[in-house]
Length: 410
Image 1 (tube, rainbow, N blue to C red):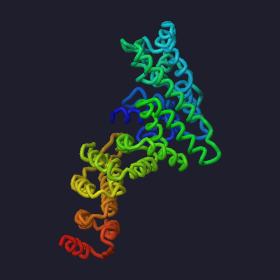
Image 2 (cartoon, rainbow, N blue to C red; image 1 turned 135 degrees about the vertical axis):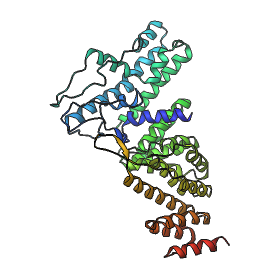
Image 3 (cartoon, rainbow, N blue to C red; image 1 turned 180 degrees about the horizontal axis):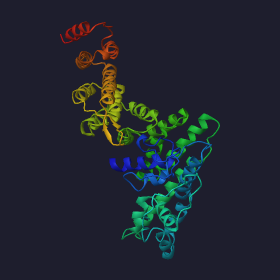
Image 4 (cartoon, one colour; image 1 turned 30 degrees about the vertical axis):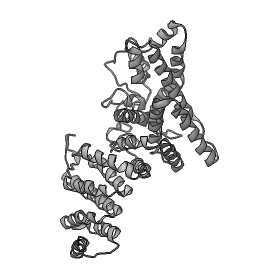
């Protein structure tokens, strides 16, 4: 179930467009004078939905590339929210020929062209039409992967499969209608609209809940705080089932919107001790090394917000096992370790650790805080503040801090 939620979250992150794309892969080349294309990461799904480049979610797209990206993105959005649900609804027909027509859209599977991904614009920023092969592949890829695979399965025409496909169409249509509806002018009415949408999605069972949760998680990265608050309200309405999906998306450490991870942490904080155990498990079992500290810092921050004493040991282990490497590109464009960037990252991560230990408030957190201060004098301010948060006493020197910690153990 964990992987289902994460996959859905990854999908909706691109489908809904209200959270930023990974910073490492801005796929459009807006000012290089070379043709604008897009690259596919590890999947054939998310980059395609996002379109050839990162769509800029604005009312006005100012460049030709932005307009082309937006057009691609909205065409996919409209197909999956309008045309596809109507086609899938035909699987409820009594005429098996209607079923075959729907299946013919993805069977046989389209062949990926050699010249894929396509160019959107040429060097002069003029639109580049898709070839016949590219258009056929694009039409095929318009269908979400899970739906394609179900239509291609041997039992595609069984009652269970057809029922599942029809429900998927309804879910996509409901999300599209909600996404494209104009917000209501009164805040309380708009909040009620969100809750009504949530109830409708939840009424469609586990699949509805999964897509609802993923949709709401995306909105935690929105620039409008009212949108964020409404999304949080919906997630809290779902209940503790959202804890693991929210923890999963914290591993998307390179999401470009810094508010996204912060809002995820704030949403989880309401669950207090119920979220502490799963968060600690993520730290113990999650990826470590390299740039994963960018995610791990938010788990540490969460433990501080939860104020669960179990977090002290977990954060202390994070400090002991710090394994961070930042990278830069050398003259040849190859990624190589960046000692200066790594040192800066280690410092920032340890500041997160001290702040979280201070918020937890347990005297057991004094020793690791003092150890970091002793190791790096630049941690003085962070250590002093964390020690004050725990003890209510303001120390001025490392010696005073050590003496205070020793007295606390008696």
